Length: 326
Image (cartoon, helix red, strand yellow):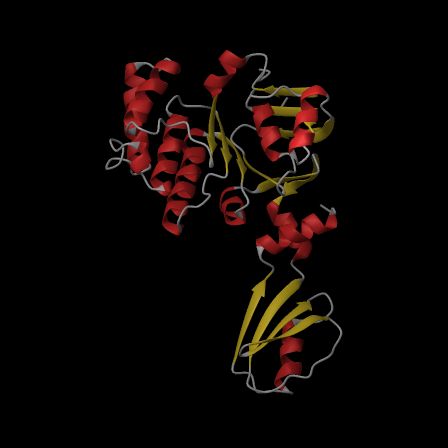
């Protein structure tokens, strides 16, 4: 059995209908109408110990519901979830010692006190021995560059500083699994890189299993080799990120700088758009090579400059969504 084993979990929420208007609000006191939303449906996957997996999908796809089930916050309506031999929602007390959770838009830090005071509270909650606590705290302060901010009240920290403190707080008790939900949301480029480098080092040194959800695909590509795509509550793709890139790598984006008008029609040219200083082309390299298309262009206009790019990862994911109609 894998370290994390999820088999056909489903979860449906019962929600009350809310109509606008004072009269409708009054009626709802006596007769409330409900509707049902299936958040996840027969979701199955397995993750080995030490893996970093990107768990992606559009808003409302079921990502957060899955994470909440895996972390023991929610009970599924049906299905099985076994993590390191434990059922998260049944073995709650024992299980929470094995996990760390970071939600980019929610905080576990006390707002009006310094981060170090929250650390002391977490030490008591997890019953961390003094020596282990001191060692872990000093290590996290060093690696996440917290020395100058750990004694500042949380409300006075920048978003990037607070997020680094959030990650440190989730790792004080040496969890085997780390759930990261949008860990770099709103961060500047420097803070993002620091967080990513730390996550890589954590995985390499301690073999921590990491499940990462993010809409920032640069997070996914820099940290994980495998992605699980969920849409409409179902797993639609589970595989290697490199294979996904290979599926669409036949498309190339060519930007041509020229002052002349380009009149070009040929097989393999998927699109041609006028830009400020030239033209943007998309070609299918299965049909026409880059050298052939550039040769055709150079016979028609004088090329001042050329730039060739592969499909961006964001566009790849959009195409994947389109393929699965989500």
